Length: 452
Image (cartoon, rainbow, N blue to C red; front, side, top):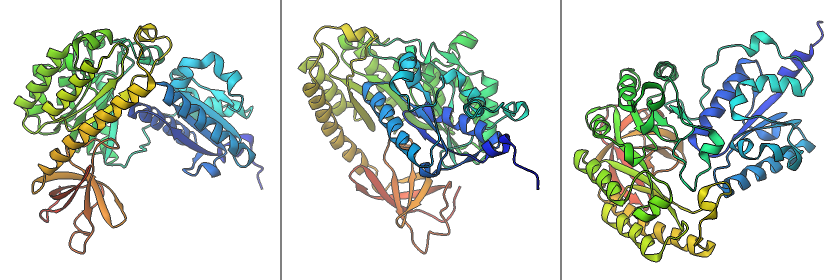
């Protein structure tokens, strides 16, 4: 019998993964997993069974850094049983790289995001084994951590906006677009995996192409992605309002594959606060863009985020946000208490708001938006919406219409019955009649027999 080599022994190690933070981080992890699998390693979803755990961290705000560190320490406890090595990558490394090695000795290796491509080499070196060159140089394809019918396409990295509260440019660097031909190729490969819904992400997708082609070319990219036959839906996340052009609005309006949905991270509506945030817009422009979207694209779903309790935000400024919400009735909104981040300009601003006041404003904003969301949902009752089915659970199919991005927006529940169980499949897009609301989510039934 031939004896096992050190290389074969290491390939028997089971590798588990944790990804924290945004969907852009998810894409990074999917590329890491593909490298791991193509090198011949075994992977596991059971962290208690993993010999090596790779943690992809987030550090956008203090709470995210805290979660990242707590996750690392919790995994470190598994070193008493099956876990042998912990590898940490992601945004936490980019901010605190010099301090991490001493403050977290439980971690065996910290890898910068730009060095993720060397993950296989790192694993071999942790076991004092020379990595096999042929396997390390293998081409790789994304390994989806989402259901096979939807995927995120990261079209850019970094950011040039330097909002006064934000650490992203310091963590992820300057804005860099991915070449269009590379994105088209990746999207075609995703379509072969069964992806029907392509979700475009980047720190600012409206700026796509400025660095490569001299001007924003997001509409051109959308048009080329739309030519991929098996891609049925294209969803846009993180479109900064100042670059939502008439050209982009017309593309959303007229392109049948582009969902009538847009994520506009507004952050505030008061012009003075927006100026202090170093946003490239003001209150009038925010209203103009929102109104233009609504006027040109009936029933468009607008999602946004707001930062409340920014330094100098008065009660009147905060009330402007509440008034905006009541008037504009956005579909989905996330509210965040301002996080004072060392190294940003806003860290040294005067008139910092107390934690208690910030949290109170977030709670009031959510209470206001809750009523708006409930009324928006009531308006959908008896309407028929195309719904993509994401999963089955507890006797229900669970899916999303054009109104909802994964994980952050409402879902539609369809009770599994004898009549529909053979007609609805995970990954299908089916017509669903909305029957009633479930506070935040919706409940519906199959409208007719055919599926898409």
